[in-house]
View 1 (cartoon, helix red, strand yellow):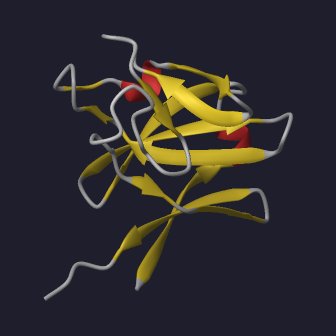
View 2 (cartoon, one colour):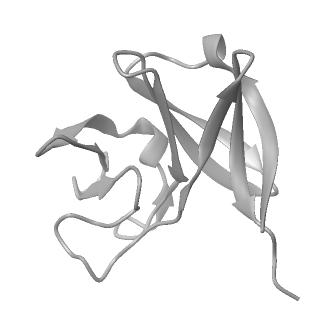
Length: 113
């Protein structure tokens, strides 16, 4: 089950850039692409650079698929799946996002007991 957390207003986001939000003690990178009216959410931790920096990465697309390039070692991560495009064995958590009444919510899986 997914728990939804209201994190900010759409107007708080930087167009074509990333920001970091704290949800349930997890750093989550949000990326706003106004051309497609899309917001993507992935974990902020770069598994190659071992630092919370992905919100500062460069966003774009490869083959029409949205991605972020890590600011450290430049690995590319798919914004909807979290898969590393250079090494498919590496994946970061990607989270569902919804926009309702100009507010952004991020879905976090409910912890299993």
